[in-house]
Amino acid sequence: QVQLVQSGAEVKKPGASVKVSCKASGYTFTNYGISWVRQAPGQGLEWMGWISAYSGSTKYAQKLQGRVTMTTDTSTSTAYMELRSLRSDDTAVYYCAKGSETYSDFDYWGQGTLVTVS
Amino acid sequence: QSVLTEPPSASGTPGQRVTISCSGSSSNIGSNYVYWYQQLPGTAPKLLIYRNNQRPSGVPDRFSGSKSGTSASLAISGLRSEDEADYYCAAWDDSLSGVVFGGGTKLTVL
Image (cartoon, rainbow over the protein chains, first blue to last red):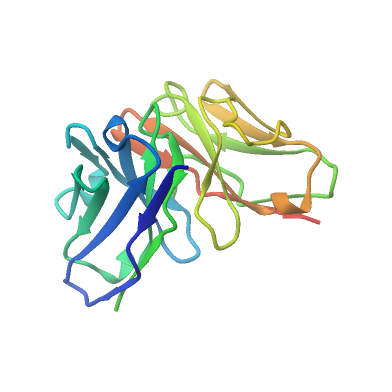
C-alpha cells in the first residue's frame, strides 16, 4: 500500500532553516511527482510547490520563490522540502502528497510535520 | 484571502443532502480540473473527487462533484455523522502557475 512517512516535529528560531523529509513506499517513486502543502494553525491549505521525482524539475508557489527548495533522493525514495529565513507565519503543519495525473491531484498524503517558528 | 471562494460553513441533519460551492475564475476553475479534499479533525486531507466529478476507489457514491463555467460544487447525500469535516476545493491556476485552494468549508452534522 502507498505510504508517505514524514520526519518529526521541529522547533526553529526566526531566520533559521528547516528541512522536512517524506519517505515514500508502495509505488514506483520516479513515476510520480510530490507536492508540498502547508496548513497554518486553524487555517486552510496552501500549496507550496511540486517536484518531479523522475527529473527533479520543480514548480514553486510564487510567494515562496527564493526561500524554498524541493529535492528528491531516488535511491531512498525520499523527498525533501527546505524552507529558509523562517518567520513566525511559517508556523504550520507541512504535508507531502503524492501526485497523480495533474499538479492538483494529490491522491496520497503524509501524516504531516509540525514546524514551529518561535 | 483565498483565490477560490467557498462558504466557511455548512450544516445538515443525518440523511439530508448538502451542497458546498466553490467559485473561481477563468484562469483556474474555468480552464482546469477541480479537485475536492476532505479533512477530518486532526488528520491529513484525503482526496474525495478528482477531475471535476470522479471518485477514487473507496469513496462512497454519496459524494459527487460537478463543474459549470467558473464554479464547482460538491454534493453529499445521505449525510452521516462521520462526514463532519472540513472540505477544500482546489484547481491549477494558469495566471499564478500554481495550485490554488478554497478557504475550506466546515461541515457540521446536526
